[in-house]
Image (cartoon, rainbow, N blue to C red):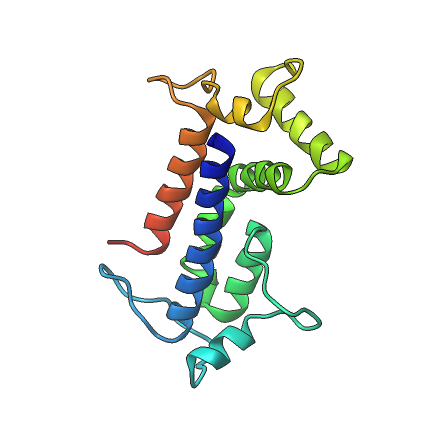
Length: 166
């Protein structure tokens, strides 16, 4: 259940990034503040969606914070609001992507990346640790105590609020 909750949260983050990016590209403004300055002005939602897909690909990836930042810098002045927010949280978002990949894919390289992440966070890799067990574990430095699941989702929520201020 914990893995599913994390995966649903990460998928919601990807959807949020894509939809907010397209809406800003179409000239929408957030509930508070102004929208970003755009370099391009697509004539329709469909065109906006097509314009964000990198050449040679069938779709735009939203899981890699650095790619989204680079895309934002090509389309919005200074990449705002995406690039500054994503860059300031890139390490944590990359960790979240590592966990997402470990949940979604069963390969030795994906598992090795997850094991490295756990070692870095906990200082050691507990034997038989499952992804859900790691997510349910308490972040060692958190006060008040907070699980890794709560910690990652809290950061994603904070980043989303900076991208679309309400």
